Image 1 (tube, helix red, strand yellow):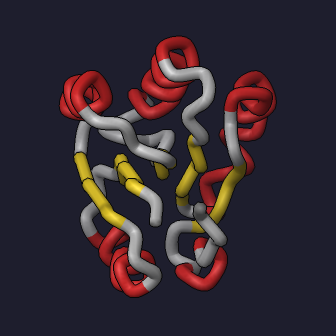
Image 2 (image 1 turned 90 degrees about the horizontal axis):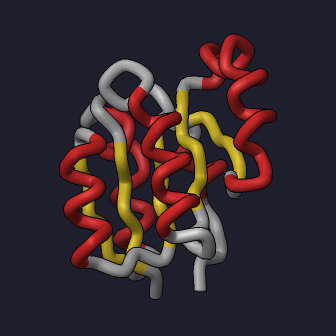
Length: 116
């Protein structure tokens, strides 16, 4: 199964879907800021990153750019509150070639992915 890194500054968001991912047999690491994520990525090899673009403000967008520059083959899935997406569409479109997709973090059914 997959090693998944979750980057989210609101603990309730990853808690909403961690149980399902663990049931599917995935290994999870959850971090709450970009600095810790950069250190983690130097020492670990996740198969997938779930990233909140509003991680501690808007540092998630910057982190996405850093991840894609340093780890171009690492898939990153944006996980955020759908109500906020409209204001982020220009930023998302700018980064879209580097982004695996977007989901609403509150809808755990939408994050049920076949991760191999």
